Length: 164
Image (cartoon, rainbow, N blue to C red; front, side):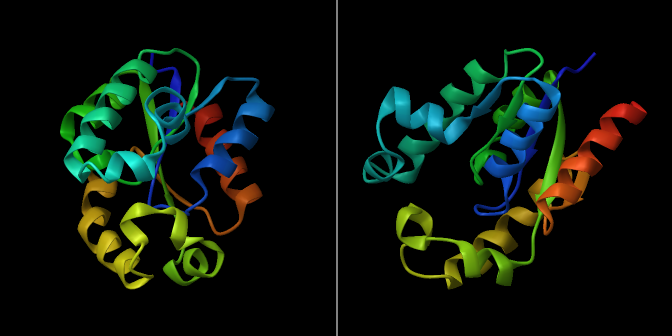
């Protein structure tokens, strides 16, 4: 039986916030792949300075380690879907939820200065959305509207309780 809850989606869609709430309600440990990377390898911004490919290699290492956990909630970086091996590892022991929020909402609340791929402004967010949307859909088991955090949390819990 798959025991992890995996959250994927665009940067700023609410993965960390929803993951922490689920962790508290379900009494499951919470892992954020970006936080793990920063704790073990350095800041994401400094890793990106060595190239996106370098960052993706490190992200894959982090995913491989974290995906082996059991009964955990895993929040991923927005680009985790760019490598099939990442998603295979996460799906092997996890139910994958794609969190969706309107881009306008994300832009209103996102600090683009702290996101390496968004340094050049919000137009990059639209491009990332276009590039990744199909991959998010491909790898997700369920799509969740994350516009309302509490509703999203409750919907995920309902899906888990239904055994779907």
